[in-house]
Image (cartoon, rainbow over all chains, first blue to last red; front, side):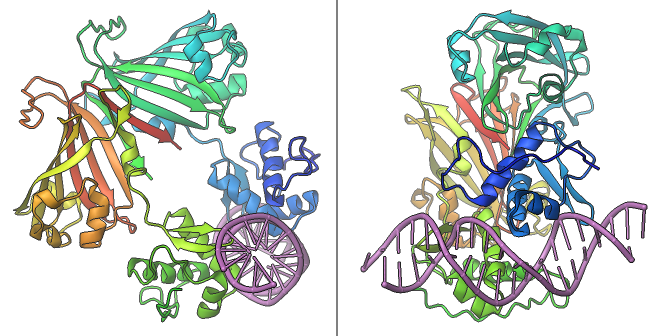
Length: 251
Length: 251
DNA sequence: TAGTGGTCTAGACCACGCT
DNA sequence: GCGTGGTCTAGACCACTAA
């Protein structure tokens, strides 16, 4: 059972007095519990009846709110069991689109290894992309990704030094293969969606990939967002085009 | 006003007696009107009240059915005006992901020109991808796509000869820039979603792109589906990597 | 068997767009 | 003002899950 008390009323400083649908306010109240980790995974969140009593609204209104959160991927309902928080398995969502054909010719997801973690002064374009103050310091991760023990992707990852301060205390060797669950665990930063733009560059030296100027490299720029649509990660990935594969479902 | 009579009862040959939610049956009934073009664009479909009376269900059930169709992108609701069928503007959906940097460096969508339309005997891999009978004949379109009057993409498009028979009577010159609305108009085939896989190939001669073996080309394989998830188009696109750009929103 | 979410009803009132 | 969809309620019964 989840014992965390529900202490919300539905007022919210910025919503006070505005015409915001009830179910929307309920949705925000529930979402607040989710981002605060009030409820733990594996245990159902309070039932629709309980939430309805708690917030003093009808069950239908709670249902509408919960449906929104299910659509957003934050909750899952299981008939007869309850409603659960969803910690999406990242290996299937964001990384699903990224493939290399390995030795067996079957598409595989490259392993990720962080090589270094460094603090940087603000960089105009990146601070803007991350919606940070113009002088906010940054954290840069260098990361390589391997298939069959060969480096196929080289990544430069930029983060807010403030939000990801916890990473500075962690040796590069101790970073997990998957970064997003790691961000969530260590820094409470939860990647929820991302935009990617794929293109090509040839005027580049990349020691990780053993690439010389003139060689064509795949370049992927990703901006990753949290649930509230704030950008939290800016990532530039370079890859060798051989055996590269990128899959998308449209709509 | 839309005068098309509603003649459905909610029974459906394959659903008879099964446990199918009411709203789902209502959804199918409405969808049948949509695919039959019973209702015209620009005019609201019958109101939720009318549909509820017609199918003898409550308004809430109709709302649930309509919501599903809105989520699927087949209908749009406009508060105070009514609910309308949605002919999505393709220029924003499927093609949004495909860009080239033009002369001005701004991303542009390449213009499409069909060069030829030919009938082919069945080809095992393609017939399988399109879920066609092993001996069903095919239609092949050759199409190029231009930016600043230069060919940047070369496309091979495979269709069911039977479903797209109407295209055979149309000279290549008369094909529209956008193919999907054209399919819908001429053949009643409505592209609703697609899967794409992007990779690279270098052992290829392509006269349209003036490419020699050894040059690296971008290769995109797309399978496009209709509303019912039947594959209706198999497309292989080759492009020159210079200035190529591919954008994706994940989640 | 008890409790969950899933479906469905029959109302009410509100906000918006048109005329 | 009138009709549309938008929100909200307070019930009912069903289907599934777990103890």
